[in-house]
Structure formats: structure tokens, C-alpha cells
Length: 419
Image 1 (cartoon, one colour):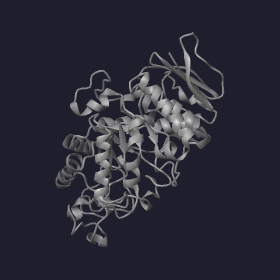
Image 2 (cartoon, rainbow, N blue to C red; image 1 turned 120 degrees about the vertical axis):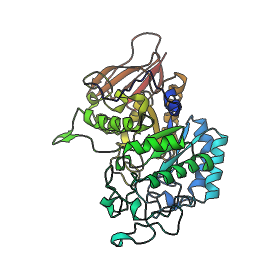
Image 3 (spheres, rainbow, N blue to C red; image 1 turned 90 degrees about the vertical axis):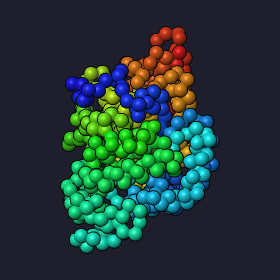
Image 4 (cartoon, helix red, strand yellow; image 1 turned 45 degrees about the vertical axis):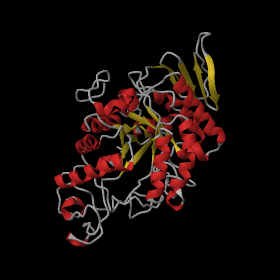
């Protein structure tokens, strides 16, 4: 069975907001560093200044977009419990330091991605029911009608899942959407963020994300639609079609204006590299994640600040990281590299990731490249991507036939060839 999408056609995208997404030649750089960057401890370090020093390397390595942690004032230091949305003084640094970083990124032609946390907002004063669900004394001084009834407010019921413990914003209120759109336009046009990442996208209807993208016009958007893969008593199901379909439904809900993180591919790939590489071919012979059904809207990744880092809710096996990158950096989709792997795991891993990125760029692999899966056995996966690249992961032996192929790079458990 193929995916179900409302009028979707990979060959006929019609709106201007999707221009960057349509080009299909992006590598998304997800900022994060266990020692000093965007992880659960990063607020303890001088982050904006530290990152500013890395901008030349980020640009030289070929990244086009850099996802920064939430830049606005937050009740919790990590940035995910926002309060005063118009204050850019955060635990990551001052507004002045942030603007200096964004200016440096602009100079090196690396786009800045803002982490948009608009599912919930911490109140300043107690209101209805004795909860902190009023926002007196700060910009956007909403009352309890801006908070969903399911989380203690006087607004309507939530249009998505609840994020427990905090007042959830009621996006069905027109005054709320007007204020959020104006704030996003300010981030885009005045502060200088060009791309958006929507946090906890399950928490409110995708139609509001569509409205916000149309209003603020980011160059690129990605949503965090993360729910559990399908498991049985013996482990993960082979078939994750219902999981990837839910992500596709969310993308459709945004009017196809946003991409989404490919949690399906992450879940399958981190099981596959443990000697179950047969998982990497679906019954139709395609990649089994979102990437296999809608590659131009799939942002592939191995880990982030929730799944890895010090939280480690769902970590990719650390001894298979390079096999993981050999997969996502040679395959369709929009690959994302995690800060910890790139800057904290040693120069050897950094350089091997750069080499894979370099092959991707030189051989013009992009989000819509064709793929032919050649082998998918327990200890061997191989594929030909486009016309000029092939790869294998696993300890099974395989190499392409024909003298036109030469080895481009290899390491423990992976190899890539090019013409």
C-alpha cells in the first residue's frame, strides 16, 4: 500500500513558500553539544559566543541551516518553558550576543533556524483555578482564555495532545494566532531567523502551523511530530507504515509547507544496525521510513537533544553512529547532523562525517534522488543512489560490479563507492 496524501505530487509543487524545500539540496545542521551546546546542560555555558567561533567551520563543512536552541526568555533554563516571548535574553546568552551570532552566520551564508515553542507558555500570575495561566506584566499579556480548558484555562479544548504540567496555548483563539504570527514575523524579519523548527507539533492542529508559515514566510520549516513506533512483545514491528502515515498526515495538514523529522527512519535504523539490516527494505522494495514515501519532506537524523545527549530517551547505538550517517548522508531526504557527534566525539568522526557530506554534494545527491536497494539481509544492506553513488553497511561482503566504480570512503561497518 502506498501513502495517502491529499493531492500530493512530488513532481508538481505549486507554492513559493516551498521553494527551498523543493530544491532538495539541503543539509540541516542540528546544533547540540554535550559539553557546551544545545543539550539539557547547555544553558550552563556561554553558548552564543561559543557557537560564533564555530561558524566558519560550519560553513566550510557545507551546512546550510543551523538549528539553535530556543532563543527567548524561558522559565526553565533549557528554553522549553517560554514566558516572555519578546525577550531575547536567555540562559544561552544576551540579545546582543545572539544578534552577533546571527550576523556572523549571515556573513558566512549559513541560515539560522529558530526553535519555535508555542504549544505551551508559563504564566506570570495566578488566574482561574489558582493556576499560573495569566500573562500580566509582560508582552502578549493574555488572560486565561488563551489557555486550553484541558490544562486549566478558560479557552477551548486542545486541538492536539496535551503537554502536561504547563498551560497549553489555545490556538483556536483568533487573538492568540494574531499575536503569534506577529511574533514569528518579528523573529523572521527583525531578529533574522530564516528557518523554523516547530516544537511538540503533536500538541496543536497542523492547520495552525500552515497559517503561521504563510504569515511569517520562513525559508524552511520542520516539525517535531514524534510519537511511538509500533512494537510487539518481541521488539519493533517490521511494518511501520501507520507510524509514517501519521507524520504524512501532519505534513498534509500544514498544506505541505513544512517538512517533518523522520522519526520512523530513526527508529527502524537504530534497530537495523544491530544485525537486523533486513528492516531497511519495505515490502515494496523502498526505504521503510518517511524517506521512502515522501523524501522531499523527510528530515533524517540519528539523535537530538531528547533522544540522545544527557536525556538519552531513545539513543542511537553509539558504536554504529558512522553506519547511521553512511545511510542518511547517501540517501534521499534532508539529512541532519547532531552537534555531539560532529564536535564532541573526536576529529576522526568529524572528518568522516564531512567526507560523507562532501560525497553527497559532489555527486549531487539530494532529497529526491532515486534509490535502488540491492541487498537487505541481517548483516548486509546495499543500495545504489542516483546514477553515481552506491553504498553498503553491515559486515556482510558486497561491492558494485563494473570498473567504473571506485571506493570513495569506508570505515568500520560501511563503504561508499562513486563513479
